[in-house]
Length: 248
Image (tube, rainbow, N blue to C red; front, side, top):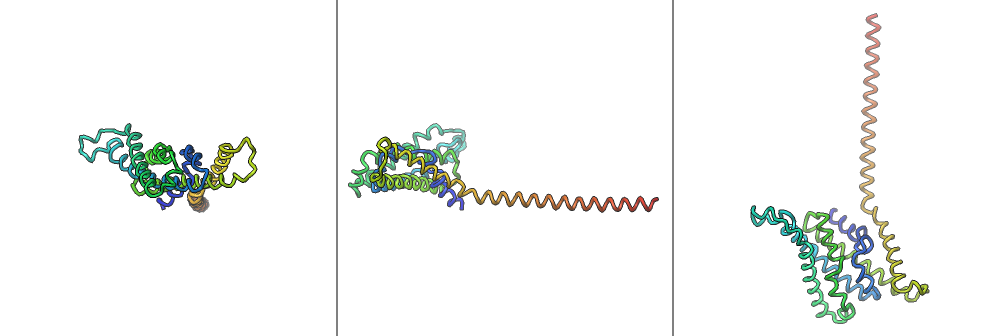
């Protein structure tokens, strides 16, 4: 359940585009056609699937304070966290270069349609943001880091796919001249972000219900204890009154 919760949360609630507005450059530039949006979105999913777990390993065994203790006790005091940005970007650039080679080899048409934006995945802030959020949230295991990377990639993929489909349709719509192009795209993105905010209670409703049930149980227990205490006090008063009468 922990994997499933993190997966859906990274897609809908903490969506890279609609929650944190990361990766907006390629999101706006490559979302004119669904075909190119699908290609770039798939590349982002692959890169995040590889880089987030790799960066988790780097963070756990190299960058965190005391992470080098596996080399020996004399290295336990080293802190290489200042190298996080450099190491994360190096990992991302390596994976993006691999993706670029594969796409150019097996799909030249997609490679040509993506153009400069395919190598720009290396500086896509959504990719780096996934690794930095993984680090700041202190995700405990490699499996959860992988789940978070895949979920974040799918969330970005859904965002660019949705806006590409809408932009293809609004070409035939009567959009006011002042809003054509990026204007209407920003408005639609804002509306979609508001829509995705509605998923915020999707994974917290059960917790709220459990909290209410727990509170109700505590109140009922306290009520029963108060009633029992009251009954005990009443019986004690009766015994005391009888004793007084006997003494009289």
